[in-house]
Length: 549
Image (cartoon, rainbow, N blue to C red; front, side, top):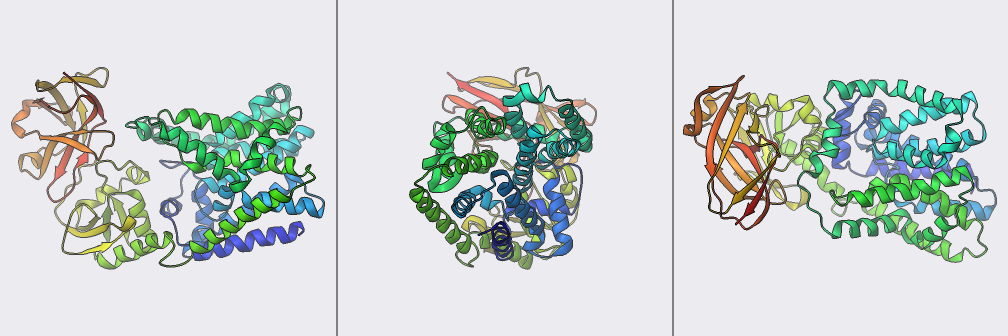
């Protein structure tokens, strides 16, 4: 196999996969981004939206969200070859085994999520860095600056790539004036995204560092599952060789030193993060790229590679089976997503259809592009790009609400084998802009003694108070345990608890007492609104509740 055959194999394999594999929920979400191009989005930077937009100009359906991803992945494979430069027939065989055994590299070779451009720009950056270390010319300096920006436009994890590859060789790069030129170029290229963050009050930072771990409770299983996933997810059965590859990395070589820390640094970073948050297997994609480089660097110098070839062959064989399985109707879990999108369109008859989760609304709109999916966010469902687009404001007109939690006479089997019910809704007034605030609490933490009343003061901002007066909406205090949707107590806050008259900048204050006999421990409190005919919505940030004797 030469490089041409290798690249043709990569391209055709992923093209077929991209055509015959149904869209996944996150891809549908990012496809929706591509219909409204911007310099940033709620969850991630905009690179994946641009890729999907370009794909959609060429093709429709699933491949219309994936074609550019597949093209760039073919370039990724080419650059991976150029970094490692296999020469003999045996080396090319070992290289191919290494490349096709990198599980998450294969997954994001056709799946269009932010990890796909991150994969491309990480490999492109490593290729450029290897050449920049040898030659700090204008060309390599320019490419270095572009790669800096490309990494950060792909996913915020790009900062870890830069941190763990540059800090180990800092003594080298800080002496090079061209390095500073590359940094300046990258900042200029990245400035539109900085401005977007400022304009939108930094939503990704608030989400990734505050909201997503607000109620996470540490469990020893989190780091254990993380470690096991990291080992097996790197290169399948070739994980036996990872230790040897790390030990034999040439730390005196600047490039290999950077790659070594690209493997180890993110692994340790995310291991520490399991203390307060769950991790996702693909977060270590950047490390898996480094593992591939070090694995091949190690195995190419070994005389006996038979076991490596067998284990790699088994890994590749299993992944090929997996690739085939996810394209088979009634077998592939991805077909459940497609069926959900199609059935939710067939059984609803309004232009606007609302769902609780952003994934559900995205799937619906991908398969029903002449209509609009909207998120009616409830309970434990997080904010998303739909919040920035303010699509919930559209629910001031008749719409269909599809949910597993409100039974009706019409239903279908949807995601995760749940029954989803079709609910026509009229005369709803959107309340998602209403903000509830706990007053006179300095530390965002309250201690409650069992069976002893505690006074609370809350303020509601931006609400039509007539909705409460006419009983169209119910105001409540919700107490949850561990997760937002695990409600263990709820009390109604009636209108006679409103301090009258007490109006503050379109706000209204309520004073009420709460007593509990819950078990000792930590809980969270939310102020929520429950519209007639719909599920409750939390309107406040969580307040930590500690129940004691």
